[in-house]
Image (cartoon, rainbow, N blue to C red; front, side, top):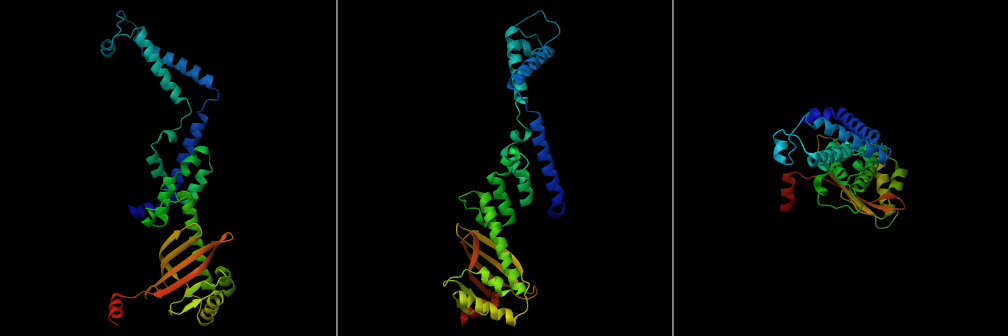
Length: 296
């Protein structure tokens, strides 16, 4: 079932957006332009429905509920009550409340959880009702957990889950750029990627520590001169974003048949962009290697 849903994800997304948009359009055209028209229409409709509900002929005008339950005719008081109830129901139907507004919030959130990030953004631009639904914090929290990690379940973002989702996606894109630079062996791009500060640090897989901007960039120059472009396969990416700081942990593979590397990238936000300030790469040890390390 999971594979089937994934294979039909674009179709499910299109159907949900279409249905929600149709509901919004339907509610817009059903809204009355003048309140007086609503009242008048509701009153006339109520009277008509009350007359149709009344038996064609009756001689016994009792004024108790037992007579109504047994099929008897309604008296003047009961007729007024029926007309009031019908009038209220008609007014509510014509007050402009859409089906989306009448849905339980949990159902709306569940429906929106099938949408991806671009679809949810496009839905929020259709009209005010869809914007309100698409900006729901629970919907963005569900999307964050689907796209990234459940480890952040205890986190309460200061600016809401939508902003936190956007910040996480941004730092993920920056982290992807890091691996593209390594693949292209571009020293100039790597120089712009790092923060020019004395406290930046880099530990390559060799275990050697380089500290300071000049030493770090020089270490990358040696790596690019001696190695061919490496196309890493990145797995198990985990990100944590604060106001001016973020860090990402991941597993990387040069060859999926060989061992993986543990990598950690730490970023700082300066002058409107993220800069790398710490990179740590180390080879993952097998269980036997861990035992040997402890013994020695």
